[in-house]
Image (cartoon, rainbow, N blue to C red; front, side):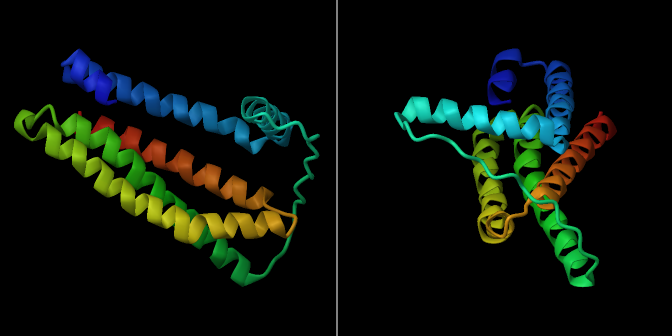
Length: 171
């Protein structure tokens, strides 16, 4: 986004690039709902990383168990995970999307706005580190995690849909 803002210098083109980028992110997130996609994809990523870092151990991935429970505390925990991940994703995406776009209107403040993206990203990172990662790692350690991955994917898709709607609204 920073490169497009600095090189294109046309806010209409940057707006269109930003819309297309968010739509592409949504399209790339959709396959994460399918186990037939995620299992071989994860296996190939691990193999590539092992080749790159020189690891030679054989890879054995366990299948994620799909648990079904009807407890009300589980539902509230799922909503908390969804909302926390939505806020974290929104902070990451809004900082990059809108601060660079706003820099067209305030040319003299572009450096400050660019620095502000890192400040906003800090809060998103803290949410991920303190609340989201422990929940996901705990679910995976318990032999599950499928539901949590779907919750994370759904909230991120909703973040990008929200940003596309905001971009259309400010247009």
